[in-house]
Amino acid sequence: MRRHKPISRRTLLRGGGVALALPWLEAMKPAAAYAATELPHRPRRFAALYVPNGVRADMWTPTGTGSAFELSPALSSLADLKQDLLVPTNLWNRASEHGDGHYVKTSGWLTCTTITKSIGIDVSCNGVSVDQIAARSVAGQTPLASMELAIDPVSTGVDTNVGYTRVYGAHIAWAGPTKPLARETNPRLAFERLFRLTQPHGSQSQRDLLLLDRVLEDAKRFRDHLGSADRSRMDEYLESVRSLEERLQRSTQFGGTWQPLASLDPQQIPPAEIPDDHQTHVRLMLDILALGFQIDATRVGTFMFGNSVSGKSFSFLDGVQGGHHDISHHQNDPEKLRQYQLITEWHVQQYGYLLRRLRAMEEDESNVLENSIILMGNELRDGNSHSPHNLPLLVGGRAGGRLATGQHLEYDRDTPLANLYVSLLNAFGVPTDQFADSTGPLPNVLTS
Image (cartoon, rainbow, N blue to C red; front, side):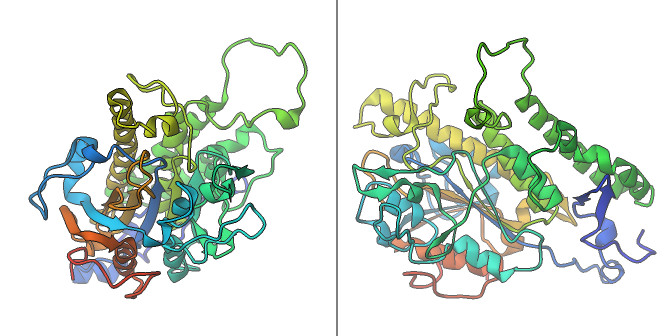
């Protein structure tokens, strides 16, 4: 393939009225790059993963600073990813230090602004979230400007305890002060949107989900023209697509012979496509985000493990009984703290799952994780105190070599969270020294 005109990064596999994007292949590299041994431009990606209800604070912070640090008990599952991580400590979001326990902090997490107190009429975060600033900088370069994924549907009504609409607890991505972005919670719809690049019609059959079947003939013809390394990459990619489709099918099928004893209003039946199992649901959404980055359908994404004040039951974990929010209000009870730690560790493990998926996706002489910025964090430190000081944050990936990973960076108490966002925007390719209440980029985050 190197002797011929290189394949476009936007080459699609087609069949049956659908199109499937391709991952990076060596055949996409310009011929001049081979002669000069220069690497082609690699797209950078940014994702923010939100965890509700704080973390077990005394088990979070690593020991040691700089590159001479040891992962804490909460982060121990990331040992093989240590050199791909930045762990900043002592950052806080000043704009969220008032109001209620959760909502002000949730909707202000990526904006570093103070939201307008509202019961739903005049919702405003009074800013733009950092993910959307990144998305605007690459507007028009991908089919999807950004991808917003979540587990819980948007909360409705008013939390009378604090006088805020629950809508604030369901949004971290804001395109403008009054424009919270809709999130997709249905794995099937997220999957079909990714590969069709349009929302499907509700009347489509289960067969339509199997997009790979409809483009396989074109894939086989295309594969015959690839070199051995590209064939291997393409086979792995198609297998990952097939695996995801099969898992989506399994999660929506019931193998028994149960029949309802009475008819139900179809509008009251919850979507069968959303898995009941929380971990299955989370993993599907993370896989979809990873594939979206791999095929360059989008370069910006957000994912919410749960809405603010999430009461999700974590009884599926051995040793945990009860809902997340209730356990987070531990009042220093040893038993609740023990369960809180298990929930914290589980969320970190899911983060590690995504990073490893991205690391396994080859891209030129690199991989997708190497060219990404994957932020995970919480809008408060501890669910019991609701403190926005010393926020629990992780940054994975090197942004194409722009982030100095493999470090625990300890800053002065109450260093602005916005300073981290300035640094990440610069790493993404947005030259700026100002975001919300920032005072400049964080030291030692960027490689130059």
